[in-house]
Length: 299
Image (cartoon, rainbow, N blue to C red; front, side):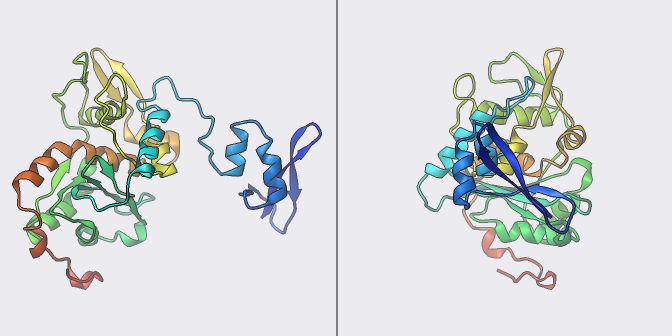
């Protein structure tokens, strides 16, 4: 594969091509190359950040119908990086489930202080059946946390059944197409479905002025940032409609698994906090084990 380095010239920047045996091209990460690194730092933004650090979200302008502004996500990620390293009680664990196809199983957790742990993406080759999905969720669960799965399309039904019937662990199913009876924070609008409500409530939680400004702490994950800022909305009378997941996937080229997982976790926050206050911490955990014949040891 030929590499494209960017170097400075008298009239700006131009690509310097280093040929190799394969007739295709990529832009290489050059921050470790002193000469070209210095040249790139002389480039105007956002080209400098895009080429020097691989930050291809740099300089991207928010879409007029974008639900969550990029700046709000970046602030939440900076807050995460600045937070002290300590153990935080897990309140909720949720999974965006894809069995087969191109999508990954993504599992995330919400902790005390509105702190989100780094998301775990498990490639489709590891997601063979509902027992494996349930086992991965149990492997990551701590502190008797609230558990939930995406039931839209029925993909999560098997994992939910495995957790509840075979493990005795309550698991809430989230159906994005379900009706919503909620309103926006200012009371001006309703939502066309639960998906719209869930996505919009994350917007409100991140909004430092007109929303609830919950001081969310999001992991500094560029994929998560890209997905959270990819949701689009449109008005439907007095209600808010969010672009369907299928249309969103076609537009961005992949499923917003990480973004959806964070949205599911925030949707379950109030129930999770109530559960933490009323259900004995760890009472279920001490009796919970995963199926040993699936290659994951019992707790």
